[in-house]
Amino acid sequence: MQNLSYIVLLQACGREHFLLWQSGGNAPDMYVLQPGKASFLAGATRADLLAGAAKLGCCVADQEPEIMDMDRSFRMLAALRPERCSSTRTCAQLLNGWNTLEDMARSIGIPMDVPDPEEKASLDLAYEKLFYGNNLPALTPEGERFNPLFTARERQIMRRYLRRLWHQIKARSRQFSMY
Image (cartoon, rainbow, N blue to C red):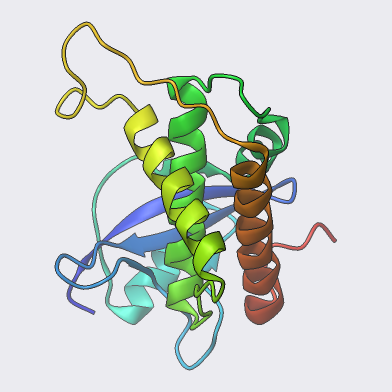
């Protein structure tokens, strides 16, 4: 593996898992897998993960882990209320959770297709609202904020899509169980 890897501390199902994420550059972003398996290279500690990464020849950026709290993302997703403004913090957490799930799913070959065109359009709009709701300085004019409203349908479709991905990730990888 030649891409630079970054440590992610995934908090999921009440536990902490250290994983390695790689930016794909022009290709899709991915998580490092155990050789020949549909499971993620993971460690209970940062040192465990680094030992596994060394065995695979991964070049790991010297950094503090990026924390991705999936438990918190799902709690925030459940707390979204239709027609109530979402904060920048909520949008950032949900967008990071969404991107994490899609990167994980892609890494182990889980399709992310949404066959219903209307559902796909609603999902795309919800993602766009989360993206702009981050209020990144490069995208948000000075002195302005975007705090999106989500319809009941967008909320329902986001919940269904992200939960489906998470359940498929847990089932295929056989990781991240509470027990």
